[in-house]
Length: 121
Image 1: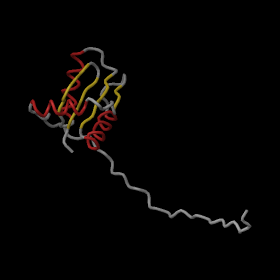
Image 2 (image 1 turned 45 degrees about the horizontal axis):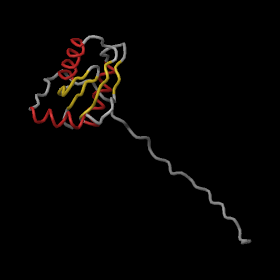
Image 3 (image 1 turned 120 degrees about the vertical axis):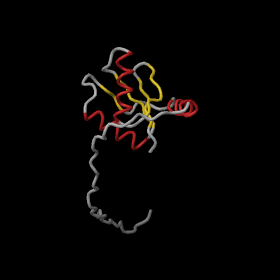
Image 4 (image 1 turned 180 degrees about the vertical axis):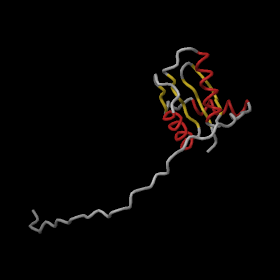
C-alpha cells in the first residue's frame, strides 16, 4: 500500500457568454419546388430510414408548427412530418401541398399520415 498524500484539485469552470440563437421568422409563401423523377426516387430512398421529426396534432397547421418544420428543414433538408390530426387522405394531400408552397419545399412522398418534405440546405 502506498502512503502518499491524496491531492484534491478544484476545477473551476470557465464562464462563457450565452449563445445567441437567431430567432426564426415565418418565411414568405413561395413556390413549391419541382423535382425530377430521379431526384424523387433518390430522396424516397434516403427518407426510408428516417423517423418523423415533426408531429402535427389536433391543432392543425399553426405558426408554431410552421416554425418547427422550417427549423427542421434548415437543419436536415429532408424530413418526415406525421400529420396525426388530419383524418382524410384528401385533407392530408392538401396539407402537403400547402406546406410545400408555404415553406418553398417539395413534397417528396405521402404515405398514410407521413409526409416527406425536402428543401436543399
